[in-house]
Image (cartoon, rainbow over all chains, first blue to last red; front, top):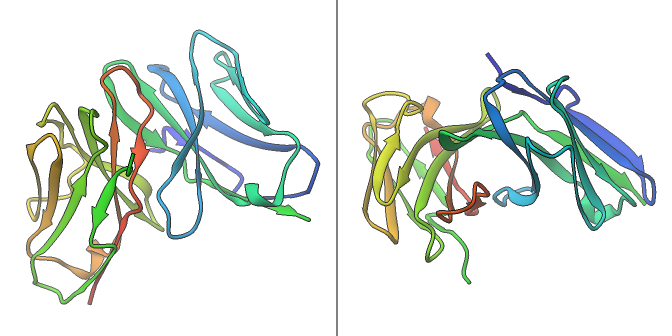
Length: 112
Length: 113
């Protein structure tokens, strides 16, 4: 039973355009959400996070939106750059358990 | 800061052999996590430690897997005996006492033939 789902295995966008990566979750106990980026042969790198008390968090070109009623979050990258090409993982945590539950990842390809 | 350090980066072994993976967390981080990444199951938690004490080992697949954290700067994940289905990339991550953000090491790619 996947508690964190990333239904799009891949996404291709043009350089300079917006990339939108989506994530759904089923566990209503999750109260903190994170996005990680992963390049081949490297470990996941933390990108941005959001607490369940917020609906938006922004950091430079990256913005995460949280819709608690829909149990849905998204990562927006504007403008997209070729160096953003990587696999993006959505992860979630609940207050009582520090471990993260990860989605299956979305491979983003930014075309020059 | 050096980040999370894992060794070895690659390990190839034969079925039945003992495998030991090592991790050095970021200094000052009191939580340490072991994850495994496979094509079939993605990134899944195996075990995590808080202040060197195992808190949740529900993800450890079976008794062949064991993990220790003898001090704040070192942890091991041992598989004995290893099996081909253990082939995966094993990641170690650490976090501070006040943050849920985890910082990952580069991983150990294990191949069991």
